Image (cartoon, rainbow, N blue to C red; front, side, top):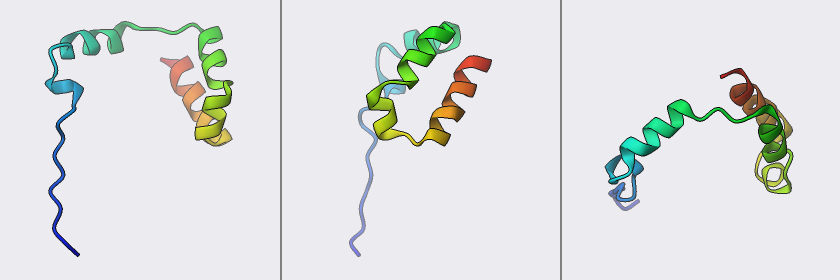
Length: 63
């Protein structure tokens, strides 16, 4: 095949808001109700398997 150079141009780590995003990620604690609502949505069920949704629930509810 042909050699392909992958360039990561649109990375949030390189944006002006990077420190804000990092702070948000460490401080945001969604309520259990919010997690359930988001992970029970049609969109979530379309893109994720039931096993993946279960894993995501555990991840967000145990942090």
